Length: 164
Length: 248
Image (tube, rainbow over all chains, first blue to last red; front, top):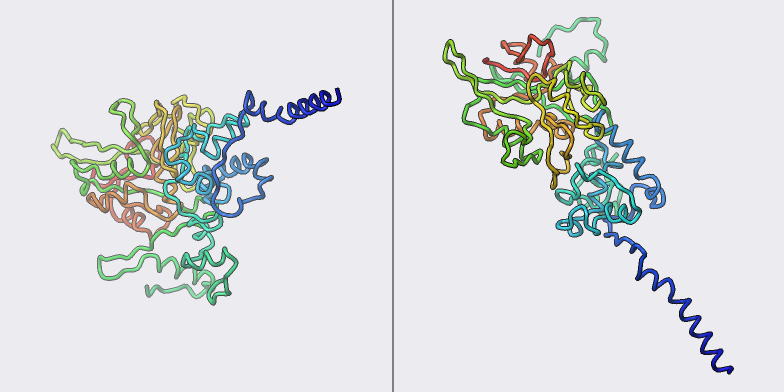
């Protein structure tokens, strides 16, 4: 008797423990597989970006289109520079699960139409980090060899004579 | 550069004056070195101090040459679907023949970037607009594809995108259901480069297009427009286009 109760208890426990796993394998939408981005961090903290990226993009869109502001910080092109690295997207196309934007929007049930017009991947990958792109370099009038920039990013920079 | 300065000139005025003069320097008689248009800081908005324009010399432009068209198509990622009636066309070559004299001229025709653009006048959503520096654009975020602007444009400069577009160039977003036209390669211009057609005409063509700031009296385009007789196509409409022609 005692043994039977023990067995029943174990069975119930096993079933309870495996319930989420069963559910995940069944009807649930699988979590998106996000390709890894370049660099250590995004232009804002991750939780801020999750909630507000659309606002940043919308504001930047109007400034760029109508006033010709070409900063890269909140530009869609810059998102793709880091998030849609070529190996992730070269053949994947915009509707495949591997695209950073598309996969998460698919999961969240968000329909965006950015990629009806905008390129889904960078033409060539140039940047190591959002703050070291050709556009930003030009804006800040910084002309340094790439090696120095990399050193600065790695925190190994020394005060260079001409830098302001 | 030995210009007599007015004694009342303040130091600031003197400096700005000499900076302007330095923009166009005479190397020898007939040889001028013009200042290269500098890129504006990327965080700054464009202003009406600049008015971008083009001057096309039809005496140099050759009828068999379509370097500008190829340059435009490549830079902006325009692909043809083998349907010339509806394929996007931002710039096209036109041959003109004067029936009286028999003279033939060839010229590229594209958005003329009017000072008073009729496309922007008729646009019901504000998608067609003129930027402060004179470049006429379509904000495809707002465009509803009604194509009223296509009808209003006297130059037939605009196209409608009928098909889904893939593999766009990152600097030239374009998609089905919107109207588009020559952007004067606005992303290049904002970075201090010349439009793709001008670049192509200079390298592969006959150096028939000058691009520059019409408001800068020392720019090559302003100097040429000042020196020689140039024409605005359909000047009778009073639109004051930013694209002008010489030799027609």
